[in-house]
Image (cartoon, rainbow, N blue to C red; front, top):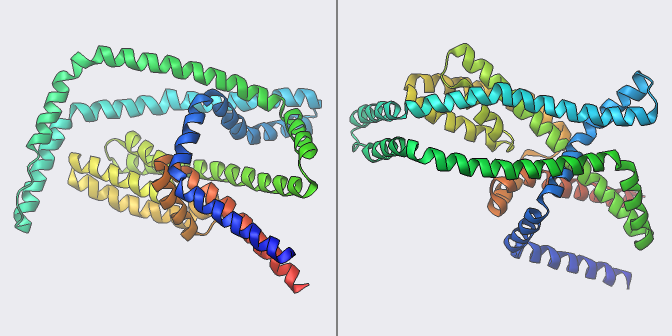
Length: 364
């Protein structure tokens, strides 16, 4: 009887998993609709989740090292966590964004010259390889037309961007307020949720739920911290290297590399290819120098930075990371790639622990 129930459980679980995969796009679209409806509050949950670890570090510093009372340490920990994140944002807005804007403006001003330069290089390459000429005149005409219409489109664009920014600022303000509430009442909210689960769930389901929730929280926290740290390190090293080599658009290229590096394994290569194309339009020799530098940087990143910063945190073999990125990208694009790895980490961890537990029971 027990064996039949066990088989039925696995059958139902397998059928449910198959249906989830079959209707995954519809499910993701529905979740996206709900997420957009509750966007400020979901953003607040994400902000509180990200700041929970810095808050804990500051709270321990004030209470254990500086010997403040628990309530005082709690308040100062929250204030310090938000001040730290605002300081980082201020640094990005005050230092990185002006450099990035300057690079983009300079690139836009010289876009016509770069395309002409690229056309000459392609003509030389086609002649040497005895290939048909590649004509970029249509692209050049589009660039010239775009630059000519830029002035006429500036005012409407500014108005549109201003409206979007005001809406985003309002959403962000609500999210910050909600995250402060969550972080300030973290223990009380978790205690209330724990009481509800205990009241309505059996002991076994309650214990299993807490176990799964713990793995989910740890997986996402380790992934966010590890991947963000690795992206910042890679972007910083890329900027320093390009600056020392005298390559153009060091700020813009490093920003692209850092942002794309948030996607595990493949992200940095995507950023490197984009950067190489941009630099090739400026000078093929500079593009070649960048590619050599980037290959060396990637070797350092893959063999030193990623294993130490990210690999130990997520504990997911490379083949499963690649599978998570591929499937996540098919289902949800870039967002699917970002969430695919921690999701796969959760599944992998649960399966690994289950197999180990079964093996231990069989041995005894």
